[in-house]
Image (cartoon, rainbow, N blue to C red; front, side, top):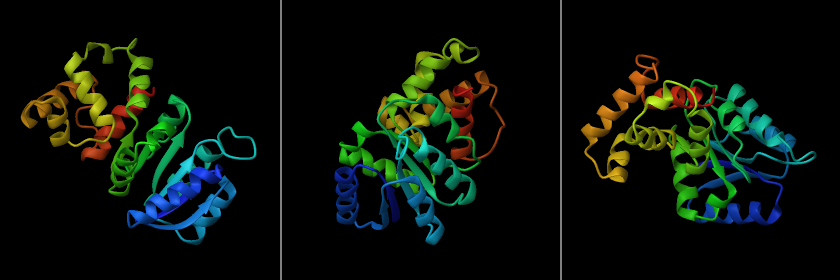
Length: 215
């Protein structure tokens, strides 16, 4: 894949450049702030952008706002954002579009090379890749609301796995159940969340669930 990196830490940025190059990806630009990120995407849109949420000059949400602009202006470009902390509002804002190809990882997860590369691959394939801790926090934030509180423990596990971007087959392997059982749980949880019939396709269903979780 063609990747643009936006990370103000020179050490982490150069480390990611080397890692991606070793994995056969082409890093077309590696920048340290949001202005340079948008300029690089404008000059040559990549397959995926990997961007830190907090970048200069204020180190608040420059990276996030750039990521959201990229989602609006270049919907075919996948976006994988990195953050030091779980910031549920940011995860929710990333899901306001109609397409998949979006991910949110905690920086600690980047140290797990296989997990980072797997997430990058999922975003590049047009799917979602959300850190399990981010998903857990979103679920915690919304368990006080109905009908989410009506989900069974197993349905909540399936929902969390879906939010991370896993396929039905992968969820079945992860939970040690049959794929047909996973499909039944998905149908049940969408009925309870009143999302049945909203959108078609895997990515749309995942985004619908996550938008509901962030409400």
